[in-house]
Figure 1: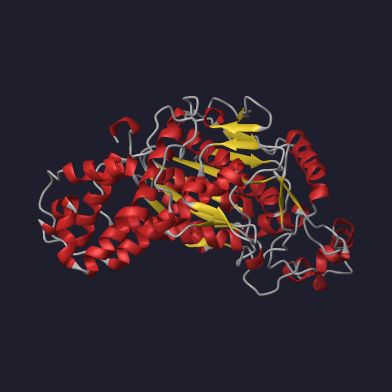
Figure 2: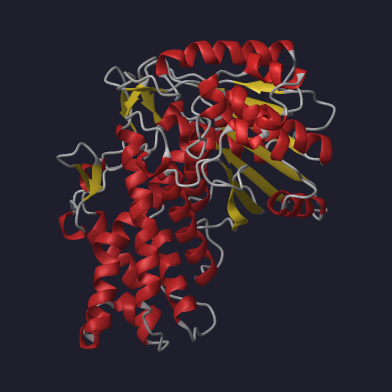
Length: 489
């Protein structure tokens, strides 16, 4: 079976960022995952970060022969192009998009004047719908065409060719512009045209802007709750979510402060734990058996304590144990690779005479005459960097009224003078990992030395490798497997 996830707007893209990392940790069911971003803001900084992470994931998956493992288990297929935008022109505005000048003096033009203010009609929309779903809904309804638009028609053909049936999951915010307009509009178009099981995560307010003193047409956090209330009432009265087979709702009462950028490259919002919840919703939907006669199902979740988030609060079906184990294993793998094994491989590659010092190198590389590919090492490094930084922000990005107890990122990251989190240099990573994963019963302060010993004892029983991809793939699989169970290291 194939799975399709569509991230609508900046929040939707960030939710897919979390889904990518869950896929890397082996949380997805078997099958391909197809991803598409929908956003009029083609230069959004947050989405650009997600696209880079996705590109590194795909490159690692395509170039590594990892064998049977949960590491990067899911093949992710980006749409071509990965971003769909409703605008084909530069500096679009609502009046130009609908050719308002051609019908200004007609009854339709008078209605247009009633529905939209002067600023709504004339403000350019290249940085998004500026918190006005009334603008976005009109544009989306006119431009999402599953028959004629190249991106959407390819999307339709892929689903039609899936003999096992396809599941489509949409995610976006309800309180902004792009997500609020696209969530019901795209769902109705897809459901009318395709025989799919449709799910969605509707994100309620979870952040607020630090500065709103501006009369520009843009999203204003003081309007978020009012927008949400109005949208939910509209959805209820007109059954706008009735086309969905499953809807998940998430929000946070204690909202995090973010910079109020209009959009574009300046809009670079850090990952947030609500987006992790939305990604878990996607995984739950893809795994859940929902029949056509079950009717629309609605899901909500809550923490045990209002202002505290722990692993047990994450809805994975097993009281948080599955995600803690999977994320913990990937975290230890990324940490060990960056701080120990990638530098060792680089040193061995630069000074081959030092190879004898690492028995794992002899087993996976030297004995099989496998050459180290520096470019491939760099791609793996980039993905590990993005994963660890994402996880640090998930831990840290909350309001002052909240406390999160998932990981201790101080082992590998620190807050800079500008207030942003950044990874330390690998040589400055802490060697004591006893509290890396919080709420873990075992303590592993000597994990790295024991891991080195276990890697030295690892044996590759597969066929002889003859290329860098297979050689390093077998090594990475062994490293990941040995990072799995605390009791084993």
